[in-house]
Image (cartoon, rainbow, N blue to C red; front, side, top):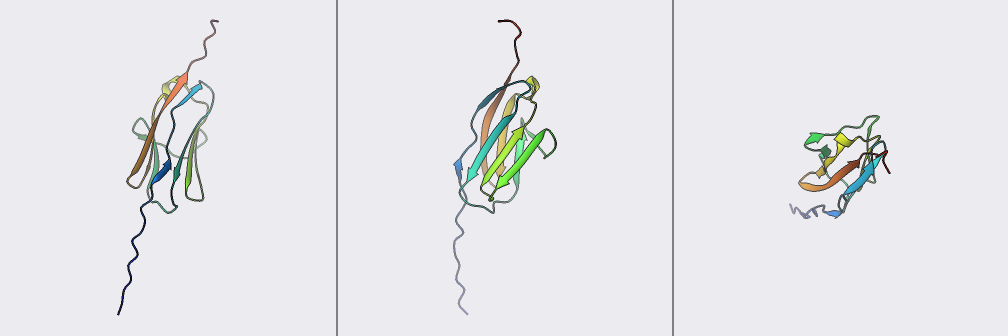
Length: 104
């Protein structure tokens, strides 16, 4: 009996998260691209708290490679560190939500 073992290529982050500045009330979108699909345990975090898909937080993936997080109607208290984790891969970026000044 001959068993052939193929070394499974480890996925890597092709394009990581980028720091994003938005005004309060706007949407902030973060995208992370992986080298291949099939990475398990994909999770998004904001300042250490896990994020889940709901009406404010949109989490999507395209072809298992492009992972996108959109935070809708952000407020100043949403400023912090956004983290994407997929298995052992991690990418982080800063979200800065700016208040709208009424003073010119």
